[in-house]
Length: 188
Image 1 (spheres, helix red, strand yellow):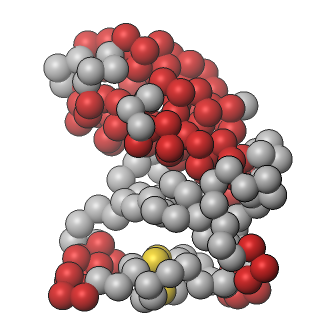
Image 2 (cartoon, helix red, strand yellow):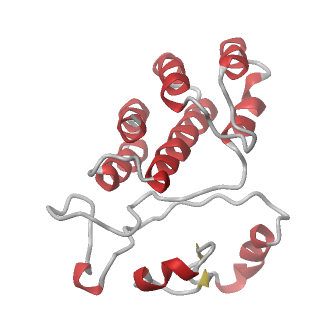
């Protein structure tokens, strides 16, 4: 389903019928950019810039609300490029990252089989390499993918939406270590 709107729409009762949902907002003259990712000409990646409400009664819904239980939290999103591939592109000139990639246990789709163990190793590297913007982004992307996979499997803690939203806020305000820590709390 492709949603073209200026704000989130309440879709909760229709989710069981939807295989995939893309919020393209109001692309205007940039509709070709939406088409490029839908038809596979470009890798897809995107994260919500707002919280997506579960019901009309939640509108407005904001991170930090006492009853923050959105359908999709601020920062929720997926991509078509597996985390393993994003990190592999960076590993050529980063020997420690290359060793982590080799040691990690990957699923066929490029996701982590042992997310907690690999994320612990990557977290140590993140703490030491905070000035490496590409590594920070790829590491947080892999942690976000693992957190969202945990949610989809139904294994996430009850406060997963708040943790993911707070992680995105931490990343946006320049605290990647806090962002990573919050995402790994969802995975464990």
